[in-house]
Image 1: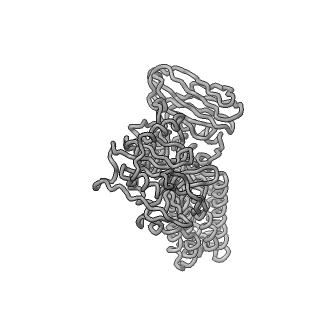
Image 2 (image 1 turned 90 degrees about the vertical axis):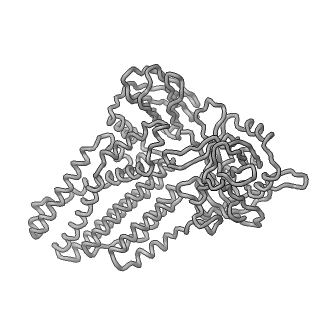
Image 3 (image 1 turned 30 degrees about the vertical axis):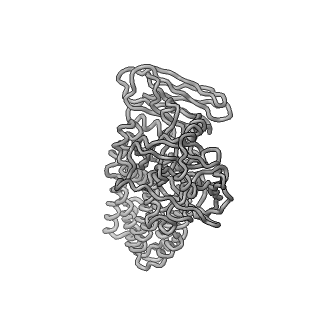
Length: 603
């Protein structure tokens, strides 16, 4: 809510250009701005533009990741420097080539290598007399190309410090005027030293008449350049082919599967987006698929641990991307489904191979080790799931103050563990149905293997029973996530809607009202209802057909308390402990077509 990065730059407020021009009249400082101009460059991409600045050397340009969204490492961009003639007039210089060299997986930052004749000068960095972050009240200048594709400067102060509870990232808030195209531009002090990187507009509440700009502190650039400022300081390039080679060359099976898990962890850590993660994961798994072989009980255990641990790592990373709004595309979801089928077929292939190569008892022992490993990992994943379900349900109900207490990493770990458990339970439930009974196993196997098999079957049954005892809303939500529903760019609406309803039922919610309304293009309709005493929870769900719908929830004092402006057809808002009185919900049709919307109110 409130953080609005767009592909082409920062999302503008309705009066932003006028505010910007007014600020310009009092903000120009000749000497520092001239120094910053030698660092400033316009970044042009298909469909838009943003800002960037030289950092470390005259070949290294920093901008926002969302400015080059959709591009990959190695893709070209066009750059335009700032030039001044003898009269003092500043404008854009000739086009220069640039190449995307790095996309940070968490921070909204990217690095471009400047091509052509590089004559610019990198910015020096604010040091703060030993302090890491600039204090509130620090006077600053915002530099960039807001909306008019012309170099501009605006003045302001650092108004506050803000931590985003969904990503645990820190930002400065500034009142320096910004608009579309400012994204990626430098925020400097009055001496032209880098203080931070412009990233977005915080547009809530909108009654103020102006917006605060969100700025990534310059101190965070160390996460982009761990080896020091400049291209040489970027993290080591992720070479999927080399990771595949290392796996295939490892002769000791236990080390081979451990190496595979380490490679998946590195892929998840370094990949700069959800799409890039899935693409790299797919390349790696398909590269090592022929070497995922089982010749001993240790191999069987290693294969199972590799498959399950890899899924857990990917699920955890996708939780991070989902919390920052980077969802799976339909293409990426299809790749994941194909990888799941591939790894399942590998396990089936190896089971069939060991049975054909070895005696029935020897082959059965390997298979039992694999089953025991699955059961062990399933039971590990079920430990503490009640608490994890509770934390996931509560995170959507906290207010701005309580959000400060959220331990983001712990929440992400909970999501990853819950999703992993859900995937495992789906696989385990299907497998148990296909396994022979203990009586049938007794006809063909030695007694000690039959007893081992019986213990494994009993552990599987206990795991399924434990899963079934979880709150139904939590299970429905997780089953939707496991099938891709809750992480999709174009979601399977009915599946996800049922998951939302299930979560609300799990915390005691009951649907109080349902209304169908017909909205014309760009129309907003306001609905009202009264909340009585003793109501602990209020949730509103709107459902439409593949149309962008927004919800704005206001309390009896006409204050906006919840808003959903994501691009989707089923927005959701909710609030804990709603005040007694008349509440309103604005339902907005952002599309160019007429649409029926079903609105549900839950208490």
